[in-house]
Length: 75
Image (cartoon, rainbow, N blue to C red):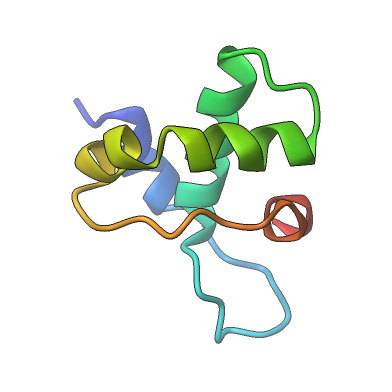
């Protein structure tokens, strides 16, 4: 059975420009985790991701540069 992270990485990216720095599935996954932790908006999500960067890097399996709230909003 695939994990939620694995499933989210399979989501298609419909953004206009394909030069995006972040995988759309990872941004959605991180946003969902932030909401489950109590984040109430894009800025709260971005702040939570920034504060939990080390732990999230371990989960994702690579270094994480936290996305800006505008990236989260645009995804």
